[in-house]
Image (tube, rainbow, N blue to C red; front, side, top):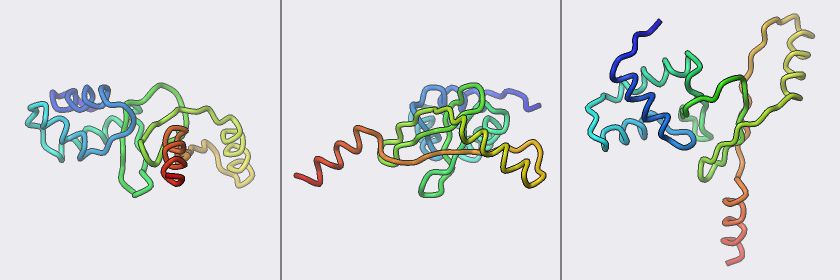
Length: 134
């Protein structure tokens, strides 16, 4: 078990205070802007530890960058706006059923999966449509 250090707590607090997903670099910049001397490598390690322990969600952005956010409890999936980053946690019972069935058909046990759906939220879709007309 990892011990809690001031650095890990600073990263956890900063992540808790962030809306949506954020990259390690952006979180590091925010910490530095608030006066923290924490190093970038330490931010990466702390985020990795938080994700491994289930205290943070980690996913890959459409650009391939790892992004993080404070995690709610329990298994869930996300709808993520490619434009503004708005993230909505969703239940996906059909995905759960499908994953269990496909794994069992192939002789796999204890299947795990990650499902993140990227698109444009209603507000960004509206702005895009207005921009196309204007």
